[in-house]
Length: 231
Image 1: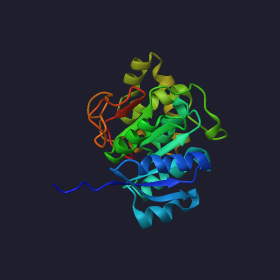
Image 2 (image 1 turned 135 degrees about the vertical axis):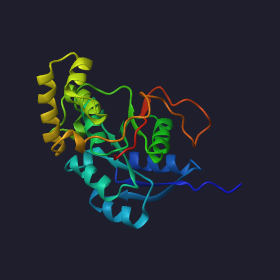
Image 3 (image 1 turned 60 degrees about the vertical axis):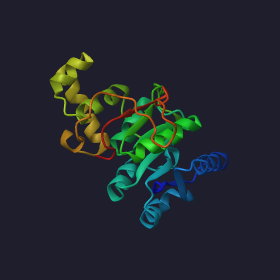
Image 4 (image 1 turned 90 degrees about the horizontal axis):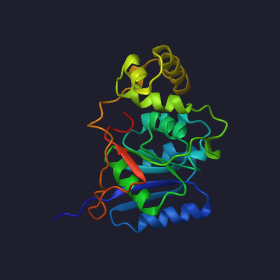
């Protein structure tokens, strides 16, 4: 049988200990291959162009603007982005995924979960931790983030729900939904829900096992949404 081509991974610059740990973790998995390490965020486009990695792991705290994620996914759609942040909130994760990131994880995420996220991202799935903090963490402080309610409205907009349907699901008024939607458009730099929408989810929220590890259920600390990242 022909050997499977390993999933190629690029690592942005992280704190020394975290960066070394990520590299050793990925290099220990025979299904993964590190093609670039300690990449300064300003050089990511150059590295993506040169190596075309399947997945890149970035430090959310090093981003000058969250919109950089959107720019990278538009310019390099074949490279799936995993963002690591300090205690990311639901709003932070929702906004990063809305900009096209494939995964939003805390820097304290377990090694097994990081590996699963890489495999899932390479399959065009979006991943985020089940347990996220209610308030923004320090890694993205100072940037205009979605509120908790906006983070709840966003995925419903992305799958094409009407204002009335969203209002019913969240038990709020239709005008409240319109207000949240306008705020989301402004913060994400889009003009309509059409720009947010991707293909419909293939079923409800579901758990998916990692193809690169022994057959097992996805850890309960992660969930994956079955629609393409960067759509």
